[in-house]
Length: 267
Length: 289
Ligand SMILES: Nc1ncnc2c1ncn2[C@@H]1O[C@H](COP(=O)(O)OP(=O)(O)O)[C@@H](O)[C@H]1O
Ligand SMILES: [Mg+2]
Image 1 (cartoon, rainbow over the protein chains, first blue to last red):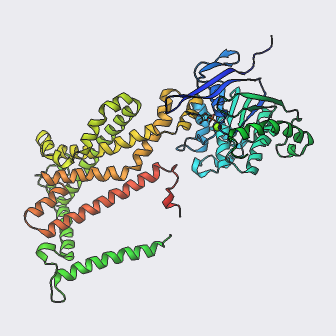
Image 2 (image 1 turned 60 degrees about the vertical axis):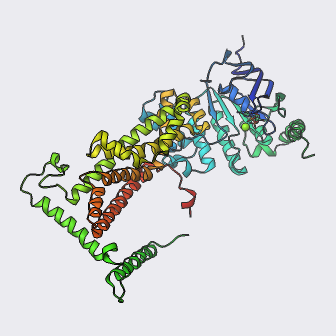
Image 3 (image 1 turned 180 degrees about the vertical axis):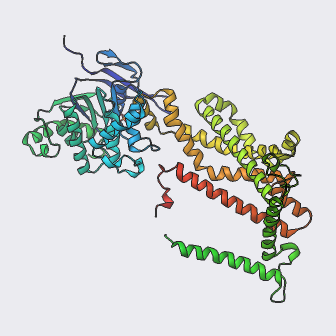
């Protein structure tokens, strides 16, 4: 018998109550499977429901209908196998970078000194060896994301959920972060759900790129296998002819949704 | 705008010199007219001399006392060694302020947490909390004296009613306004309710409380001084009230100067504590020059 997928979303509906009393059906009938050690990127126009879908996989949101299965078991409460790197800054501002990372271990009962030592190893791994004593506001946006990544990965989750993790960073830093992520992932292949609005980034990093339709009632409308060879360099891979073919094929589908999302405002 | 430190000090000193100079000239009648008669306005040198005298007298009284220094007697207003010395007044006001601050903060933190975590409790008590907070505290002073006597506890109670509400509102706000993203992140990291309390709610509430530390410490002292002023046998408020009772304007001004210096000193201590505890806070936008 084949292993069940690590994450399986089956015909998931998510509804939010609106101030008027009506319900806003953000996601409707979205289905997605992610296998172990598979890197799946989710792209879609802004506001379509990418974060919402990720929150369902994390157990932070309960779908109104449909099922979420993790390793073949229905998800109850929070997803204990998942690490979540949020779109917004989620570091505790009152703790240093090192303590933020160490805390992720201490929560699970690791003694403080051991947790701090291992946090230092992770600081080095994400290129912040000498920044351990800094507080969040003393770090740049990219450095904060690195700390966040270390905080999530130090717990060694089987599933990595990432919500536009490099969104607010400049183009160059994004590519550096992309390579960092690819290297960490190559060393320890986890199932990854990577949300982004940047199609190029999605193709450069992922094994599969799935497209979400414009909301409301968003669902998965496209699923593209990215057959670029690994190991990849997130910057250089963009120069390959195959990259351009894939980009052209997927963009054709995504463009239509982006136009829909803007309600024809951009013609 | 960045002003050189020495320049600022010179300018600040200049303000004091002009103010004191005007006061001096006005009260001494240097140019033939006395526009600040001494009976009503005293004079800066008199006030200075009085302050020095108070400290010298007090120190001499304690130093020449034959009996051994005894902590239990330091607070006794009729004690032969310490009674009514300026040191005793300062000590008593400090103790009252400190007790009001500590007890008021503890109660404020606990109530703030309780209300923030139990919306029903908050909703039920909301109008009453607002009602009590709207009450001018001075009107409570006579009642506290009736209940608790003329000793330090009626002053502590008055300070408490001021400190409690500041801390309470700040902690309540701090717990409720924890960033939902930080909270979601903490839960995804596997924190239990207790760990959330310790690592997220508590630091957030404390940071709000500390941001109002100057105000709450200031109010603790105000509560103590106002209480003493309205009825007591010791403290800086008593000192000023006694001087007023005999139209001793020099004594009133001397008491006010000592009180102001005391408050400045305490405020400086609070800044030290704050700088230690809130190192993680980004500097306020106005301070980023
Ligand atoms: N808590 C909420 N309450 C009401 N509407 C929400 C809430 N969260 C998200 N939405 C709506 O659901 C849709 C999808 O949101 P989201 O998943 O954040 O989109 P994105 O793809 O940009 O991550 C949006 O239209 C948004 O307005
Ligand atoms: Mg989003």
